[in-house]
Length: 154
Image (cartoon, rainbow, N blue to C red; front, side, top):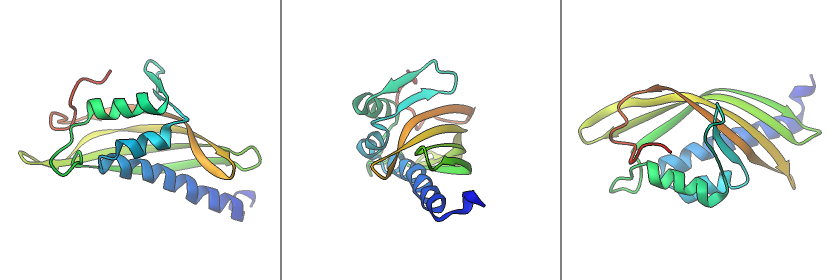
């Protein structure tokens, strides 16, 4: 099977790790790290109404909307599931579909899901390294975000 080649396996792992690293950065309050991962990408909602590009604009979105607590984190866990990768090795392009669920626990709010939605990602491989080219998102379900969102989303 062509999709089971070593190159695809390495790419699958690299892409999965990239998606996981994004969630890790956000949950650690490392908005610089998350913006670095997306610095060459366009970030947009699935409908295309909201579009951001450039590291600084993407970092500002995170910093202006997510509330950070004393430990420097938003007290969240982004859980990414149902990952479906489509990798075109010869062209160095790939896409991914996945679900996300954001869990949060803070004083006055027991552990609970506060958001759920979908990511539609596009990737490019440059100089042997996979990078986000586009991250589109859709928020499908909203719970109590009063302890998470600092301001209304732009």
